[in-house]
Image (tube, rainbow, N blue to C red):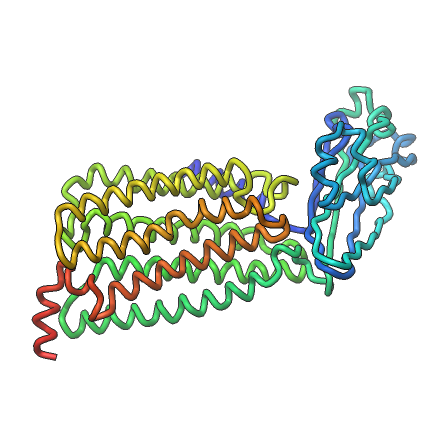
Length: 424
């Protein structure tokens, strides 16, 4: 529990924003420092940047001003810039501006700039440099070791929206998904109540699916609220964003467990696991992996090499875990298939297709993003994973509630179900 609280606190501090504030100790400042990135849509984009020095006590130093070089790079030159030495990169910067920072602890004059894209959207990268050490050489003495340089950047996209181009439209897509989730939630809930009142029957599989739906609807609803705040101030509410991610992990874990348990014959060949002492640690391990993936995904969220939360080695680690879950899922299907015949085998094949698409969707999307434009990668991953997860829930709903579905014929409740159908 203690480790979980530490992770939660870390997520709160690292959550995404495009009103960026960063702090550097002067004595630890490098020749060149990356600040943030932003996807600019076709049209006019405005950014405001200001600096301040914190910790100067000498009246002489507080009355002075100190220079820092601000640089702006376009995505077309960015890879080439990264290959150069730190102090050679500024030759590729599209915009450079030396800003004088007062030593009195107050922010410098706000530097306002405009970016205009004519043909397509672009990613822009913001950085500062002190290659000639004009700033750092002023603070060599030990008395200045606590002095900090603070940076504040506020960027507004076309139409004065706070969203970067890769976030455009995602909130509308989420609204549709939430509405679909609510409809399925009401339908499944009504189905459970109706069956219980009419036959005193309770489907644990369907109940777990309802829990999954509820968690997913809560997750996306909370995230929509965060995005609404974000659209107004460029920051959003960190707690809401983190809460939505944690609830989403719980929903994903629930869906994974339903698929895995079904693959091993749960609700088909048996209703209780004989080796539960083995299955429980495995389920906890899956939960740990999924929470770890999300936690690590937040680390350096705004790094220049990350176009979405799972860019780079984090995404490939997550892909490896999903593939491991897929292999375990397929192993369960194979084991159940060999022990069954007829309709059960047909159901196993269908479940393999439904579940297989869910498990391999993340690695496939991660691979597709290797050839997708940088400003589109966030959308590909977000919309892709949400769509496929929702599709998996829709298919499971059909499996559990349709009278004509194979699951209705082969499940543990099938005998009483068929008897009831004779009377209906």
